[in-house]
Picture 1 (tube, helix red, strand yellow):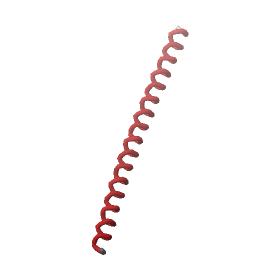
Picture 2 (tube, one colour):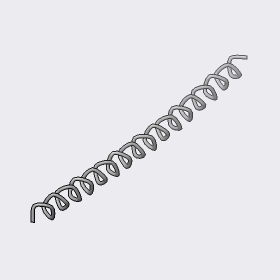
Picture 3 (cartoon, one colour):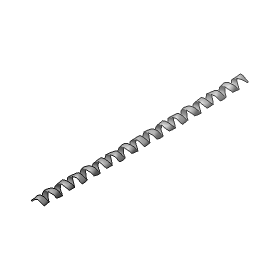
Picture 4 (cartoon, helix red, strand yellow):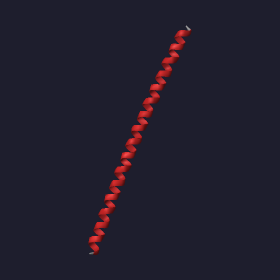
Length: 61
């Protein structure tokens, strides 16, 4: 009986560890996605800013 309990506990611990790992992986993926989105947004902003400045420059000519 005790062995069974120990085995069950071990299995539960393993499952928990796996779940935690999966969650961590998901979190990492989410973080990566967020970072990519932020980078894209920054790039868009930079491009838009550059375009704006160029238009202003041409208008001033």
